[in-house]
Image (cartoon, rainbow, N blue to C red):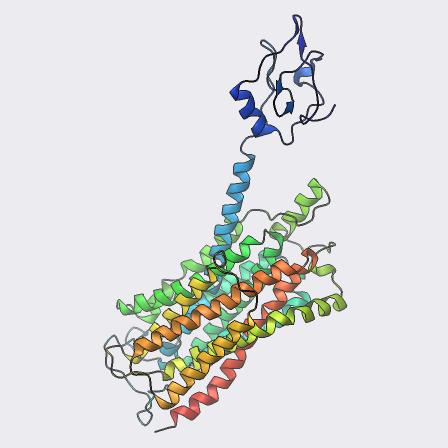
Length: 490
């Protein structure tokens, strides 16, 4: 027999045919369970030969006869289960983005303190809460540290660059769970090492651990989005923006409240634990993109998340792509990779090359406090734009790259000529800079997710990760000599 739609079934008992007009409950029952209803046999082994009650939507058995065994209702919570899984994955990826980038952002926010590295009793880094700046180079109008904050940027980005360069070649052979564990452990180690360090060199080693955590995590979680609905990319991007805002704001707020940098860093050790909990406890098993069958789809979907051994190559996964296919896909990605490289080069040249030099003496904020405010406002702009995908989508990211380059030229001119009269104008420009950077990031990955096939998406996400890291690395390399040159000016 066929299903409910268009099929005709008969009910019978000792009294003959049973028929009645459909009730409102009948219509509700039918609307809820029309899809997937099976009508091949009656429950309980009874033979049915009479006419079934009909509904206006087609012939379908609605209710069992009085006195007969009732049809067990199909599982109603199925839709609620899918909705629950959707929100668990959405919140999970948001938290993963938040926790993954948190240590990276905090290290950049603490860059000025790491390089100043003034110590007080109790082996705690000292942060001067007063408004009077403490110049490190009195012959310069920029109040420079002996080493540019770009040094912290390079320590925070070069390990990430190495990881992202190697990731498309073989990182997919390592299961996801060990990668996440390593990422969480490195993040916790970075906070501890920087908090208890006695020298700038030891602190930079801690920054390297933060870089390993962030880089490995970003490649891992962006690749993992290939096994979930495309909407999780928006949640991941929003979470990374939230990491920038909350990381910079928490470091600013706690140090402004009187805590030392050491105490502030140790208070953030809960973030790596939240990363591990979000991955292992909150995320549901991912859905297969193109399942060949129900059992195979379920097995394939669970594999990337919970397998402990190296996954087997499957058609449609990045491990099944040949080098020739990878190169072809990578060439197609250049339309998105190049603009993102330019955006990140310009904004991090500003952040780690010019922020320290945009020093205003006609304000109550000390030099260290000005630097932290710059970082916080930049991250606020990033968070807002990375969370805006549902409201605003940008197809041509080249426009964002051009605007960011104009920001760089304008602020570099101000560093050289000093024509901006107030720090609040710089605050607005930095907020705008963050909006451009966040928009470039989220729209790039969203466009790639839309335009790549299922079999190429995992590789495409991992390969495009190199864009921001490459741009940041180049900006750090150029910011170091610029810092030394400008700081020698009288």
